[in-house]
Image (cartoon, rainbow, N blue to C red):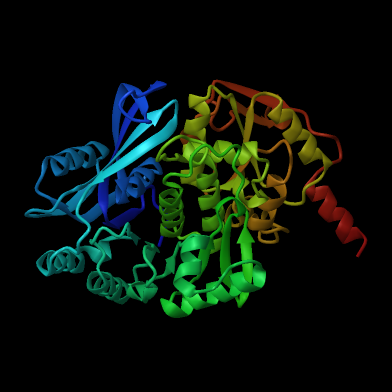
Length: 473
């Protein structure tokens, strides 16, 4: 799948409304030994599969949802909330079914009590068949399918197996946040996202160390015939089964306030990354960052791409590769930086064999603003500019080395004759070129607010380095 601005993801599962009554508690009731909460505010948010949808929308996905609801006032409220999000939906109403609503009384940010009003029986066979018919028609239009199972009767064994079978025939991955102890109903899914406790119940393995964790991961894979096997480990991160070994990708949370909905965020963010065709390791890293953010918020929370980018930087855990951006990604980054009133500096070049002159030039360029974005000529572009024997180093190597420099914040590769279209998409504050452009027109100077010329260090150039190497041979 080629990279796209908004991956198209289908969510199937139990929809509900999370209802919060916020207040203060300053006394005990004279009628019974219970707290008296003075309610000051009332809020409602989508819960269950709805929280997965919230997270996907927050991550800028195009989302559709399939579910079954009641024919009650809660259903009307739920539909309105989905419409406000811009999520498309196929919602089948069943006579007499109660749409799930969970109400929580909160006193001084602590939950005092929760009461639920819902139906938990399996949906009718007619409803299941209707969902399947629609899925057969639309499955090929989705990049990924997520099952959000809260055990409220939507994802029956028959429906789950039928959906997975259809998805697999159309080469569409299915990711599942599972419920219950029998994971055979998810047989054929791409992966499941059980937490440690859920995995122990489903496999019968008491996870105490890496050996038992490996055993549980292997059992999960066998039970549900999974492509990949993972287990979420709360603050310890996410464990992945790779080549009969356990790999644990750690997460870091600044401070844990509330784990409500963290599983929904992991499912949504993992699905989002995989839908963009990222590999499992980078997808898990992305999901860990998202989870680290939401547990620092109160209630079922969501996370944005901007928050993940900022969080990643604040933890100083971003890998070198994460500083290498695509055209679409750098456009998003630039938009975020502008919202934060950061001064963006742009420069470009081949940077074939990195030397002191390059580093000095880039260090000066960074001093003109807050963030330095470097446009790097692709291999094909370098050949057109420098001849068939160049570049010496391929674009991936050049981008990697440049991204490791402290003064370079982002690298983006471009293939055109000039970086004009790239500059146009970034709209930098300052454009930087070498002093040899004195008296010449600098490409993009009509877009940037200012253009700066930087002196080179005499005798330092890739051409001279190549000549020196050739002379010694």
